[in-house]
Amino acid sequence: MRYVLLGDGDSPHLLKWARGLRAADPALELWAASSRGFMAGFEATIPGERRLALATRPDTAGGNVGLLRELPRLVRWLRQVDADWLHAHYLSSHGTLAWLACRFGGLRAGLLASAWGSDILVAPEHSAALRWATRRVLRHAALATSDSQHMAVRMRALGAGEVCVFPFGLEVLPPVPARADKDPGLWFANRGLEPIYAPERALHVFARHAQADDRLVVANDGRLRPMLEALAGTLGIAARTRFVGRLAPDAQDECYARASWYLSLPTSDSVAVSVLEAMAHGCVPLLSDLPANRELVRDGDNGLIVPAHDAVDPGALDAMRTRAGDIALANHAWVAGHALFAPAVAAFLARVRALPR
Image (cartoon, rainbow, N blue to C red; front, side):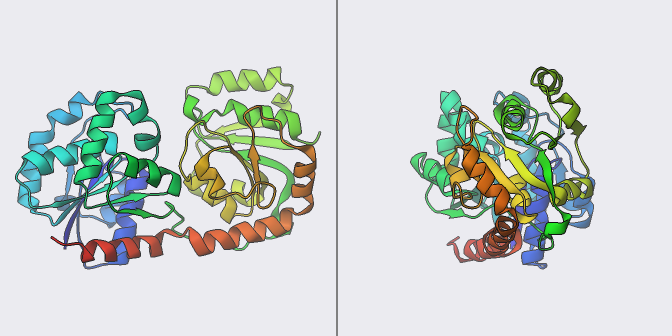
């Protein structure tokens, strides 16, 4: 099978898919086209002669004229590759490009489509043009993937046929969390410091509910960081809050392993990899009230759903403190059983092989 990934090669998410497909079938003839460039990790997965970098600067909000201008170049390359399948990741941009290539480029390749979150949950609601394009992609795709049941429902409403649903899970399961390694007063937040992730809510929840000697580590970066640093001062938690920027994977794993509490409170989301990572490391997740989050957290059992006003029931939080060790083990076991990436990709690839061509 000759198989082409189309997406953002500078994203670790596309690299993760490439590694997952390679692990599922080492004999798969894997190619990749990127709207930008390629991370260094691709060298070990897809050789340079099987990659095309379009070197554009796509915008997830739309208006990707520069990307569309590269359609003729992409089509010429795809005709030379003569793939069986073209697998687009993020449908507003790469999915549209893939649909146009299949529809007007004279390719024999079938189309596969992987939604990543805002391309389904946000973009089609904000733009009639993006809604139209997303419908075309989903209707043309022989098979689509979603990382949550909630997003899959939205995809089907937009015209998708068959949708495989599985979390964009972990490649490696961390060790079973040891209670002795956990700091009961350490809170951790690492979503992007951008409006869609509402990182200010993490500060408000910590200020309202943390104990007097608890500390908060805020990782990642974004345009809201100066505002958030000022807000920490306003809320009186600046001395107990550290902004550490983007962390290397090992450093981030160390934060997960030590933290007892994990905050993820975006305004829109599907199943987030960072939440799965936190659960696997035994953190108690405090999540915004979104349908996909309720697929992960049973409120008051293995974590808490934070209402829009950021006030958690103090009794429920105290119960979480008492049961933190048991919650850590249960969440680790759930990820082991439901959210590992390798078996999910292997099952997906087996389904692709069974599709008529």
